[in-house]
Structure formats: structure tokens, C-alpha cells
Length: 401
Image 1 (cartoon, rainbow, N blue to C red):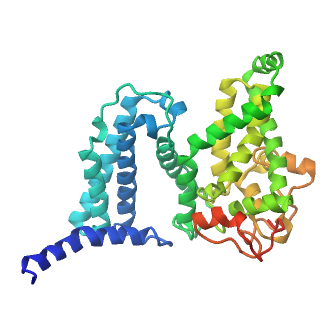
Image 2: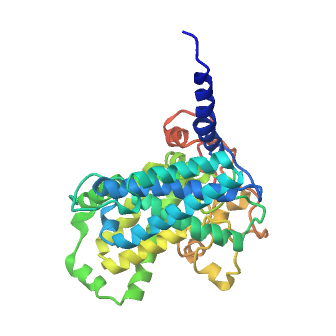
């Protein structure tokens, strides 16, 4: 049967309005480099990102029992979240529609606008939230949305205001891989916490002494928090050092060190098993000592901020503080592949631990020259990096960075 004249026309319309925009969006996710101003790319990417996150947020409103984190959902103000979602939809819709009208990055803006329409059609900020069971399997979609949005707004601004490497682009090489690490590590937060809590209670529960925990919890807040961070950093220091000095463990930790460009997203590159093991090793002494809930919440904020900030493309005049706390300058040296940086600067919070244990970097250079694992043998791609520790390799297996 021959095609009627209407069929080729329909195909052209579909290609131009659906296939071409989707293909352009897909190509964007595989690109890196600097964005050229004046072409609408920046506003289109902002609209696309907000449109996508808004669609995810609407799904979280529809299925909160499966897509939101219990510890977070109890702290939410639903009205505030609705207002934030509405604002995101308005900004994404306005930017994308303006670009479509002005003919700037039109195809990409069409995808962003379609996401806004889809989110609005599914209920937008007016999705009703009723009672739902609180003890269901879940993935941390809400934590992913909030952390990605918050981290982008905060750390991209800081990196632009105080850059260490001024010519470094936002979309640097391998950003896609690190974004996948970021997403997966957030989505599996429920599973990770379940495993961590199970191991803590079954492996270390017998060490808990309620009388000693009561003493710790009645210590004033600030000194208790400082001690909590110190205990956590001591556990983290020796666990981290073991990852470098034990060849088998290095295969897992090499994933984290394989990043060759340091920025706020770089710290997300981590093997899932290392994530769980490290959390158990660090949280176990905190669980045994029984720090108060307020102190633990404050510690989680501190470790969350430093984990991102210390990888960021940031340079500030730290003065004597650089010998006391871990800064981006300090941690960048840990990721360097320069000879003097190998197996140095293990601490996550208190830099003086490395000076105390003799593992602080000593260099006449102000900043590292190269990052990544020596030999650059780590494959790119989230799946390949997760499989790397389990496959045979002729590459070096000794802890080189």
C-alpha cells in the first residue's frame, strides 16, 4: 500500500516536534565543554533541569510512601514544598517558552516545556497528599531532588566566585558519569541505611552501655559535637588509610580517585560497597558512644557539606585554619597523582590528624599538577566502575593515589 501525501507530512511533523528535540536533549547529555553565551543554552539547560526535577517531584507527591525518605518526610512543610514546586514550574515554563518564541535553543526548550506540561498534567503543585503507611520500601527520590538542586545552587555559585581553576567549565569531562554516581547513591539511600543499621545493631550492639551513653548525651552541645566529629574522623582516617594500603580494598577506592577534574560533583564518584562499609566503620563508634540526636543531626550536616565542599573547584585564603580543618586545598592534594601526594591527607574533617600521624602532604608546590589514579587505568562509565573491583586486570593493583 503506497503512502498518501499526508503520511510523509505527518512523519516530518513528528520528526521536527518530537524526535529532533529528544535527540538534541540526548546529545546534550553526552557533551562537555563551555557553554557559549547568547544562544539560549544556559536558560534552556536551567529550564530542562527544573522541568525534569519538577516532574520527579510530582511523582514523589503521588507516591510518597515509596519515593520519599522517612527521616525527611517528617520534617517537611507540604505547603512550602508546593510553593517551591510551583515556582520551579513557572521558571522552567517561562524560560523554555521564551526561548521557543525567540528561536533560541528551540528544540531543547521544547523538551523542557514538554516536561513542564507533563508535570502540570499530572497535578503539578496541587497533588493531594493523604495518609499513607510509614514503613514501606523506598528510594530517596526526594533526597536526590533536594540535594541536587541545593548543591547546584550553592556550590556552583561558590565555584564561580572563588575558583581554583578559573577556566574550568561546569560541564567538564566525565560529568555524566559522576551525575550517575550522585543519582544512584541517593536513590539507594534507603537500602544503604537499612544495611548500615542492621550491621550496626548486630555487630556492635553488645558494646553499647547505657550509663556511658547517658554521660555522653549530657555533655554540652558544642564540645559534644566537636568530640563526635573527632571520633568519626579518627574512624574515617584509619578506614580511608586501609583503602589505600590494602591492595584488595584499593580496587574499590580507586573508583573514587579516578576522577581527573575536581569540582563539587567529583566527590559523588564512589563504589556502592565502599559507601556502605565506610558508613558502618564511621557510624559504629558514634552508635556505641551514644551521641545525642541533635549532635548526630549536626554531624550529618557537617559531613554532608564537607564531602561536597572539599572536592569543589574552590580556593580561599584559609590562613592557620588549614592546619586545623580539612579544606578544598588540603583534600585536592589527596586526589593528586603527583609523587609527593601519594597516600597523603586522609582526614575528612580535622587536618591536624594527618600532621599528627605523619601523612600530611609536604610540597613546595602550591597546588597539584595532576589528578586521578597513576596510570589512568579506571574505565569511564558508572557500570564499568562498579564492576572494576571484581574483574581481572593487568593494571597496577597497588594503592597509587
